[in-house]
Amino acid sequence: MDKYITLLGIVLCLSAATTSSLETTHGRDMKTHNINQVELQITNYGTCGPAWWPKGSGHMYIYGAGFWFGTIDPVTGDTLVTIGYGPHGGESECVPGLQGMPLGSIIYMYPSPWPPPADTYPMAPQDRVSHQDSWCCYNDCDSNHHMPGDTRPIGLEIYQTGYAWNEPGIEDIIFLTLEFKNVSEHNLENCYVGVCADCDIGNEAGGFANDICGLILDKSYFIGENLYIIDDLAYQWQEVEEPGWQESAGAIGFDILQTPFDLEEGEDKDGDGIPDQYERDSVYYWNNVPQHKWDVDSDGIPDWRDASENPQLGLTAFKRFTLTIEPNRDPERYMTLAGYNFTTGEYEPYDTIPLPDPDDQRYLMSTGPFNLENDSIMTIVCAVVLAEYGENAVPQAETCLVLTDHRAQVQYNMNWLLSVEEIISDQTVTNNLLFGPNPVIKRGFITFSLQHAGNVTITLYNSVGQLVKEIYNENTAAGSHSIHFDTYGLAQGTYLCILETPDSRSSCSLVILR
Image (cartoon, rainbow, N blue to C red; front, top):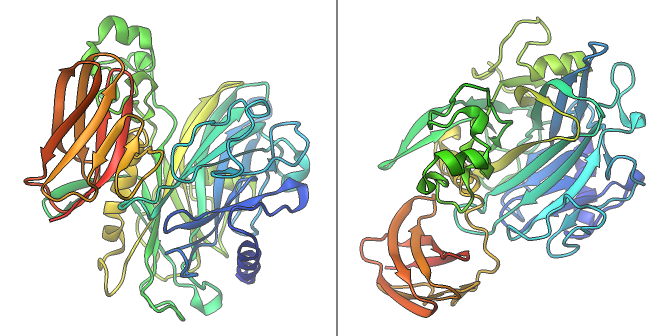
């Protein structure tokens, strides 16, 4: 797609108030996540982007992105693909709202408007998780919004949730959760779902096209004394200075943190001793698994309800293409989702070798195949991560994203570890947890209260999600308590303190100074 449209998109976005809706035809709405360093425009019809980073710089890192969902019609054998974003022409085949709903459903974003009305959207969240939650819904059921020729609606409702935290270590990340509900009245078979992204770093028009795409597929990195394992991270960078930018260009990545479950009767894919067919069965846990193993990552969510503790399909394909060579019809798109080279028909699931010449590259990362029964929901979770790359930063594009992507994975794995209500600069109060002083030098105190007696644990995590200290672990009487602790052996930096009682789980952010 010619990049002159980018200017129009930027003008439209910047002319609207950050948290006000931009109403266009068919009830379409746009809002911008901007609580941290990433400014990401989202819509209620399946497209996201542009994105700018760092906030206020005006440096663009995403031209457009969105989902692709493909299936094979079991009756006709037709390949059907619904797209939230088509990079060739910016197409979307979705409309705002639920199936059959009069157009006009908006994006709900904290603090206002929030929460979504529960009587209209019973599936929508009511409690805030991050510093800037968003939620919207859209569907692919209107045939008038599908590309002519070879496509028709699949029968999907999509529920989209966004999370953004303005906290050290995760201020360069936006999380997006997409829930796909089958409303077609029949089962969907041989399904694939993916994210298609055109991550333009700056100006990619004509002779300025210099994008390079890569994939990190299960690779280990040592940074200092720490080992990090990165998987399913598609990233993009460029090796020349961006005209007009004061700073060197950074790198951007998309990581699919959650894919469909990979569960088969009689197998134990994750080697935890629990047969796949019982991984999500609470009765099996109750009768066969010791209670201390019900929550192996101690995130407060029992494993049968914890998506990060279930075997997943993972990444099926990573396919690159350019403005001039791109899958534009449903059969071509389905082949690409399934890992085939749509121009040759050959199965080539991972385009891991950089193309010889930088170009206006775009890519699709996908997972599947899976079946989706009528009235059932399948969920994917994606993180958009950015980091410095250039003369004054980490000198390798993939390496510079490792820490940020690792923090995104920890935040997801630990059930949104930093789900705090408020961060107060002097003292932090979350439910019944009080920590002070903040920042702390040498010694601090933690005050909490219990309605009922029981075991209480207080633990400290560093900014990459590693447990660094267990401050307290005792059976404790009901009432108010004050615990003193020292910071001996702890490096200067930002930490997360987590209090777990029989009745609740609270957390607060704290800074240790030397």
